[in-house]
Image (cartoon, rainbow, N blue to C red):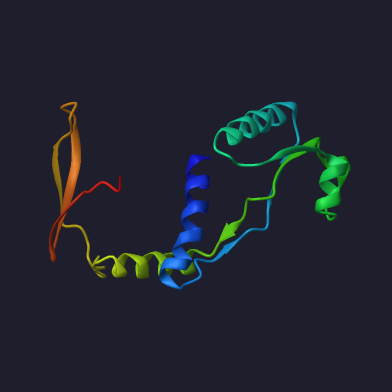
Length: 145
């Protein structure tokens, strides 16, 4: 849920920065429940969403059909509806991210298989991948925050 909230916020900035539409279509999302267990799961999901500012509501089958009339209200119990949910075109998103990265000074290497993992220890003394070795050289992992 936090990933969704963060991604939606960043998509708004991405188009402004790059001039490329990242392909987001805000068409809403309906999650259909066929059982009491799934209904409880959706109630928990709704509560968790509130923490991250994701608006949603539980709806009866009849209310759901008002939003999406092709559904048969006798075939499910209820739904979780989030009007801010949507889909994204992966190609448009990758192109927009790539342009933004290049504008920020990044280089993109194609046809670049990893030849070796560079392994080290993290702060807990556990093994961790620290980078990769390729035909273009070594690349170390970096943090985005």
